[in-house]
Structures are given as structure tokens and as C-alpha cells.
Image (tube, rainbow, N blue to C red; front, side):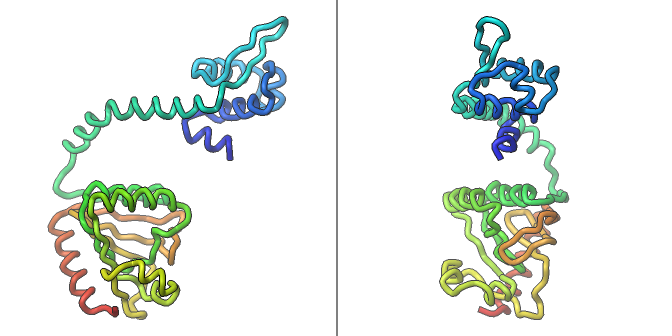
Length: 248
């Protein structure tokens, strides 16, 4: 878990293994580091050099073989913040280039849990109400709980409202107190029209899904993203008809 997280914040696999090894060893020479991390001695030298350059370990000069010690792990937060600062400095230019390439219509695909998060980021970017067809409470998948909490906080600031047409299994499986928390802007599909797919409409976007289950997102969930104002307006019109004819 530790090594995986270190890689996620930018360390190479060997850098993560050696940093973890030194946290356990406190201080060690190349030979001991190689044995403990199971990395070939030749590769240890190269990796140590990079870790020293990044300020994550430092040499302890003494008689005989040099030894190395890790710096306080708090340094890792500094590295992450430095990367964030660097990204923020070029973000306006990147956004400008992105906006310049946008056309009135666009179609693309998101996949997996990370792709699902990208779709939620699109909702925040549009900043408009969202209309759901065939919703299954997929947002409550435990894997995106932290992301969802942050998302809902930002959505509230942007005054985004959510209007649901749920599949009937949501009504059947969800406790009454949880249903009450969903507010008044929801209704339920008749049971014979429940499916494994869904569609969401927000701003100029229409997003259709395969791979959704009750409170769960499939690992290979696929999201088909369409951006077209007229199409989104049409879907919202159909949503209103469906909402007026669905069960409360």
C-alpha cells in the first residue's frame, strides 16, 4: 500500500521501494539497501542519486562505505505541492488551448472508475442542473466516496440541482430514510422498464452508460459522452415527459 501510494505521487517503482526500505532501516549502505529492497545493486546506485536530487534521502559521510538516510516523510507533501504550483502556473494557457479546439459538437468515451470521475468533473465545469434517466445510485460506490464528498460540496456552491428518474430497484432496495434524503426531485421507472444502462443530461452534454448497478460502478464501466446543445435540449424535453409519467 505504501509503495503504491508513493508511485501515485510520482516516485518510480524503484524509488518507492528504496525510500520505504530506508524508512525501515533508518540508515544503510548500498549493499544493505539492495538486499532489503530486492533491487540489483547497479540499479540502487542510479535510484539513490535521483532520490538525493529530489531531497528525499541524504548521504551520511563516514569511514568506509557511504550510508543513506531518509528525510522526514513530510517532504513528500512539499513535492506534491511544488508539482501543483507548477501545474497551476501553466493551467490558464492549457485551458485556453483546450477551449480553442472545442467545436459545437463532440463525441468521445470515458472508461473505468477514473473515467466516471471525469464525467462528474464535466458536471461541475458546466455548472448546470443534471437530469438522470435510469439512475441507480452509482455515485454511492464506496470507491469514489471521498471524491463524491468533494464533488457535492462544489456542486452546492455552484447551486447545481439533481433531478432523478430512478430505476425501480432503487425504491425496492433503499431504506425509507435514505429515500427521504434524496429530496422531492425524483421519481421511479416502472419495473418493466428498468435496464442496466442510464443517461444523464447537463448543460450541452448527454452522457449514456453501460456497466452500472445499484450503488456500484463496474470496473469497466463505459460512458459515451456527447456534447451538442440541440441534442441535450431534446433529451431534457424527453426527460420531462418521462418524469411526468413515472411513479412517485
